[in-house]
Length: 226
Image (cartoon, rainbow, N blue to C red; front, side, top):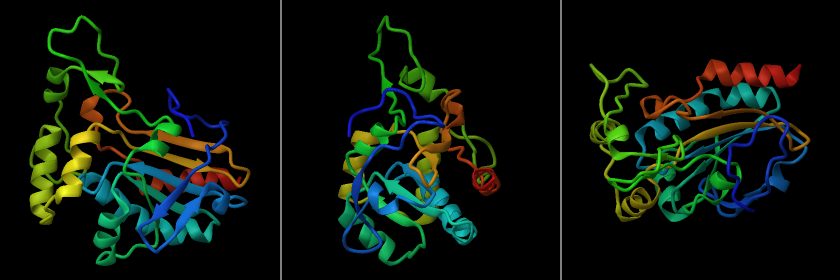
């Protein structure tokens, strides 16, 4: 499973993977999902409150997708032991897979932004590189939970406190290594071909944490059925 330099697009073949599950002991692979369409989302770790909210949204539409014959899968950038502990108290119908190293994120081409050193002559190329000033200037309010848009890291801090989510040592380690990992959603058909894709914040850091809505995902599944 190699790195894909740009996000995979409709018509591309979905790369193979095999990852440990957070819902139960064992693993799930691409081969296990073959022969049936599936929606797969690649997320940051549990430290990201917006990712946690998107997982709740996926759980809410899972019955609709399942009725349409589509499996719902989420890959989270969290060690399996931490994820199993968290979801033991928050069960979900979504099949949860753990990739603490983001190998599958990279295989599907979901970008990871890197900050350019201060004084670098290199031009930033979002979503692959950015200046710290560019990131610090971003303001977000994707779920409408703030009275006014906040800087992304401040938004995370506020929502984690509101959710009473305390980052443990595993979360801190993932945050330190993968904080600027972006999120991607892919709908894969029964033949293993990508039919629909959506990547977070392609137009700039002020679009961070804007994910596809339930209606957009259901519409994509409807297009697949046609």
